[in-house]
Image (tube, rainbow, N blue to C red; front, side, top):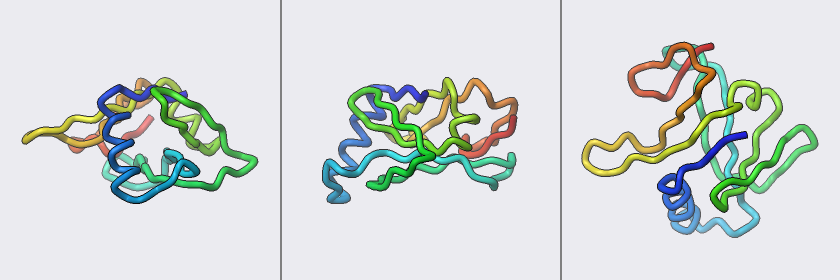
Amino acid sequence: MIKISETAALRLNELKVSENHNTDFNLRVLVKGGGCSGLMYDLKFDNQISDTDKVFEDAGIKIIIDKKSLFYLIGTELDFSGGLNGKGFEFKNPNASRTCGCGESFSL
């Protein structure tokens, strides 16, 4: 399961409205190969849920994760840092043994 901070939930709701997504769209979190550390996070709004997806809810946000990505994301917190020096969405993943400087890729 993924935890979503209050700040991240607020920003996700703002984005959902600004991108004109209705209530059928939920947050899909993926882990895919790439980045300087080997694995990358990907966030998008999605209205399709397959039989191999797991669906969770935290902070009022419904989260869809495929089974493969779930292995890498257990215990992760999604946060949002705004402002002049803000990084945007930030993954705090206790499973990552190494992360890159930008925080968008990791390895186990």
